[in-house]
Length: 261
Ligand code: DGL
Image (tube, rainbow, N blue to C red; front, top):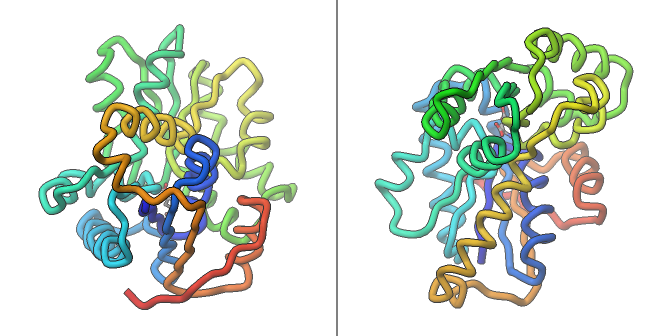
């Protein structure tokens, strides 16, 4: 099974991309809805959550882990790889590689949670691959609650998106990384506000492509993954709103099981 976790609903955008890239693979998802949002918490707290979420997914039979959360990816990767002897995927490196490959002018904007932006991980990785890249980051702490509330098309949401993207427009970025797995749900508004000429990099698509390549190159690990099209969804707090937004993301009803971590 492919184990995937996020603080809440955002990781479902990664589930969607994984199901598109790897149809039939068994997946197990954990959304930490009782402790969301992660983006305003300290690195140590988020690291502990990431370790606990991973222990839960492993206890359910996951053989590889996907941190479908930029906030966890930006602070927990080192501790995760130090602790677990299985393949662990984060969402930042694939988005960085894809933007360097496709951004011709290398004027790259990043939007993410406060914790992700504060970690500086995107700048570090982008400049590590190409020191000439110009990188501009903006924290957008209101986006996660708007998505969790299902406010995907409201005029207030459009206004807030416009306000957050303004400094990146002024910098004339030509590539924009959606550095939070919740943000693909606002992609249409973001595209409209940042302008059609800016290429949008969706980390959920980038990581799914990376996992597919990895499994092609490591057939011995691919063999360990069930392929019966099974999917299980766990959350630490079941709410009606989560069920509703999950339906919007995945385009179907899912059965949510509550678990205490
Ligand atoms: N979806 C998450 C991310 O990619 C985190 C949102 C949050 O809990 O703040 O950063």
